[in-house]
Image (cartoon, rainbow, N blue to C red; front, side, top):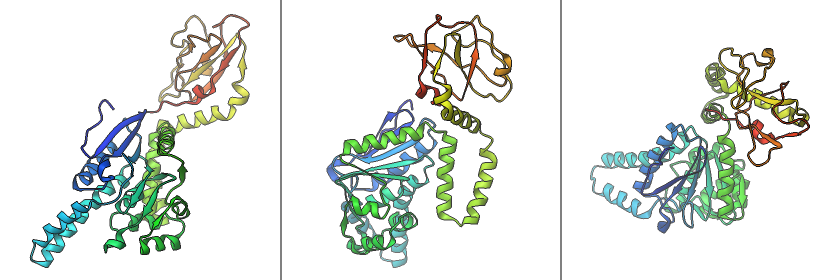
Length: 369
């Protein structure tokens, strides 16, 4: 992204390409959620949902906590506003509208088509658990204290915990106990119910782990990743028959994507890299090719010229860029997005007798749109 939007209650940065870190930024209030935070959260995730440079989002809390839930001052203000309404029906409509506003804020996280990874530390209380429930993957620091606090303040959780988690958690008995008692629980019990999937010793390790995972996902096809999230959320909310019908219609269009061809070719290279990408003698080199929508034959790679190749090997392909490492002249680096690797005999590109070692990680890296 050329420039990240600025908010008063959220802090955004881009720690890795195509990865956006969103931090709740009310550290003096332990990231308790007031009306402004709810509104900015909705605006932020709706914007990131359509931002092409963002493929994965990490959601964390600044300071000592992920979030301690709804700000008591905000609740008090909202309660005072409803008291001033005399008619009970109008009062109910006002409260209903307030609840809907907070629900839509957290649902923006759930509805965001980009994967959202929660990095939870310190305290995750009340609406903090609701917010975590709206994320796709939940990591936690070991010292995190959790609590589904709503019963203790006289209400049922209404912005995610009781609406989403029952379809995701693995231990319903323990989950019901935690809901009914509002007692605190640690990462061990959070893992028992399936609330979190991985625990880190420190907040720093937690953020590094979440960002690293986000970077891995960001290098996958965004068509495949976002389509998977859309189908996972649809499956959560519909019957099995409905799910099959939906994905059938979805893939009737998505299977036409060039990312399918790219992924298959990259997989093919990855499986055979140990046997086919070992060492090559000086009279051979590696040519990187990528499928095009129309046939195209090319005999010169960018940066090299003066040699011929078998055009049959290049049918429907385009040569990728080849460049020698500036410091280590015995290593040939392939910076171009690699989807198919063809070993062909050409005129010499390097002095005779020099062994070329292929950097395999570079070979299988993809630069997808």
